[in-house]
Image (cartoon, helix red, strand yellow):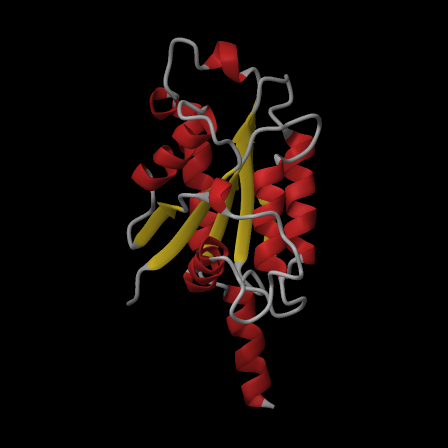
Length: 195
């Protein structure tokens, strides 16, 4: 049986970002038979510009992102909340993987959004915006696979995310949902084949 692959995109560029540490927890806590990797270099991708999105002009890092998303079985966005929404670097990544419209690399791929932020609600506005954008980009967003951890500065002042049992279990739960086989899709295919 082939290994399930989950690609994480992290919305914070800071070296010591707690959201980056969530991505490390995800890689370490992946279910058996699942590999979790983080895409490096989102900050190197130019802002989406349709003039660049033509054969022979697509920036190399944008093409690399599209290929990585297309090859993954699932996408896990891990993001803080900036000014009530998702960081620009993550919005830009979604813009690139959404094109061409209806045929972008995210089309049909399972996706979930988690993260932590300094506010008391843990970035839920940003997470909701990211889910909406992913849906429009064609991803199969898992609405119930969530984790929003508030008060990140105080919560992780003396404990690392990998040592926070609630965080680890929450991330494991989201990964399990992303790695689970698409039972409903298979049932629909079997029913169609029977007719």
